[in-house]
Length: 122
Image 1 (cartoon, helix red, strand yellow):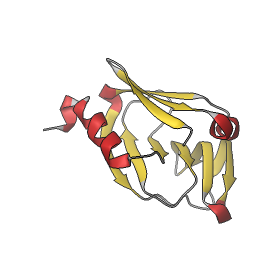
Image 2 (cartoon, helix red, strand yellow):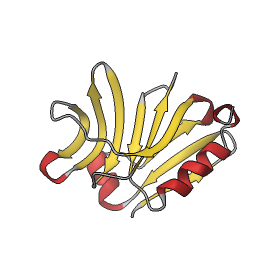
Image 3 (cartoon, rainbow, N blue to C red):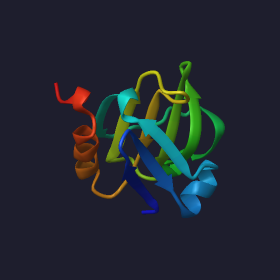
């Protein structure tokens, strides 16, 4: 996959490359650890009526890349399968309520995110 996570001291960077970055119109999403409210591995099915703001969506093929809005909440989606996805719920992030993406070894990546977020280990 042309996605990888970079674990920095105070924030997490989701890096996109190749067609993912072209379709999402974005190469990087930065998430401060302090804004992560929940993180888990699961499946997410984007509602058909999500607004692309900007992004690329091919609902019949389960391909979603970019920024979307639904029920007054902002999503950053980057996936091309029904799951498993890394699902990060955010609070007080400057742009998004949710960041949802597919990546190799999602369980290992979620464990690493939790390791960097002491407030999630309570």
